[in-house]
Length: 431
Image (cartoon, rainbow, N blue to C red; front, side):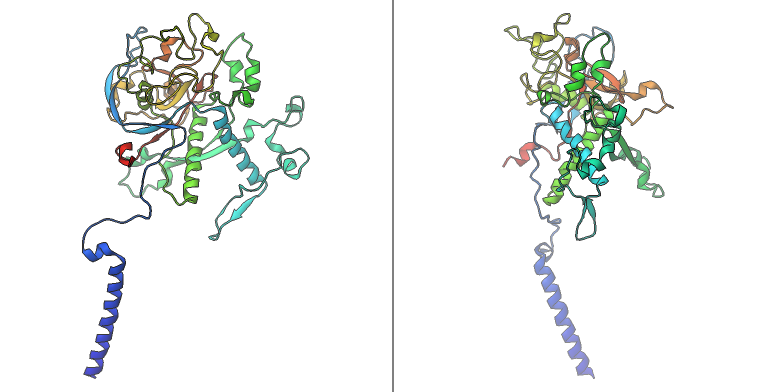
């Protein structure tokens, strides 16, 4: 009996030895007994988003670069630091925004047509390979009639999308709110996740509504849809629509990354007011304009941006309303039209004395979704920057602040996206 037990124990010991040896051979770092971290299948080498410029981390003097001639006291000078980020080289164009609106339109259509595919795990998703037949009289077109104006709402029999039917749903996670209750495990995470829905087609009628006793109907009819304006900045979008675009752009990127088994990126978003000003200055601290200054004309007398020169000589700069993006020289960060063409939405709520209580590191007072009828009207204001085609030169200055209501669309306000840089510096990935 003793010998039999000894033999059995010996066999078990040999099996255990073989198992442990095999385990250690598969994990050399454990074999060495060193703390080396967990190896990843892919190394992070940074990204280079198409159409975006890298803005390095830095410190600058935020605020006015010249005398506060209006005595607004809304842009006091303050030294602040900014984490590195990417920013779109130009404002989002009609063509780029149409990619978004077409995606939303098609996703609604595919859902209505019940065009889904199922993977091996039983998960369903839209079948983007399905060719939707939009031609009148087709089976698909008949099933999708509700997306278009019908009956008396039609004009000259033209087939036009009904903006009320083209809405985009997306979710946002309020990390700031959760951080205040992070030790209270009884509060579910879902309490800080909110779903939003917004119409996404631009408000073409803003071209008419913005100007009294002025004939701008041709722009209202043609600006967003006509190919002549494909490379012009999109306008007539509210702050909420711009937020929806950023959410969709993140989804678009990360969906492709998942297919390629690549790492997801940080969220695309609107730039903070601090980031916008830092980027607009192009590294020229204290300069009143993106190109330096102090003038808005070069030595040959040519205007350096699209705005309202003199007492209203709109066509002097080569345009009448907006002009094609990148029509003027970029600043030293490679960014075009940071002054003029269209003003741009930021993510920052507008307060007259906001600079005074902002943190000096990535300062930001994020706009909370609204408007909320229970709060003061000033809390529905969002900072806009850069000046536009219809503004005088004062609003072109990098330090000038202005605002608009978040649910308002204007013929002179557009936007561009930002994306936080992950890492210390772009130089880390230069080799």
